[in-house]
Image 1 (cartoon, rainbow, N blue to C red):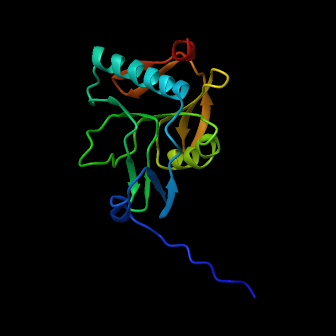
Image 2 (image 1 turned 90 degrees about the vertical axis):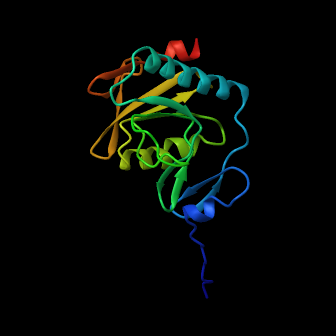
Length: 177
């Protein structure tokens, strides 16, 4: 006889009451990994600073900004915390509630599988225009652009057009150099 399984489903209202670092994926709590290691943090900071500097020097009409480790509330049952995002829409409230224009994730042993599969699929489905994956283990990166809810690989040292009048430039060598 098969035992019935009970999998509780949580909402953002529940999530907001939890202690510690969590993400919420389709109503299922997912514990965040321990604090990233030194190399991961340096790469995250370099990406955020590179994007932020360009957006400050040449602001976009849409007001695009780079942010670091902030929650994105996808819907009432899903909250994720990407490493770096570019928002071209001012957040309302405590969470980012609209899809970011760009997300960068830095791979680590504890996040690699999620970043390459579940998060990639989620970001594409939600219309995140650019998904950048950086691997500090071998100083490599993969850049993707969404097309019809799926990502296609694009050159990883190019200009990224955030909106009609806003372009940022990222070179993998600059991030890992």
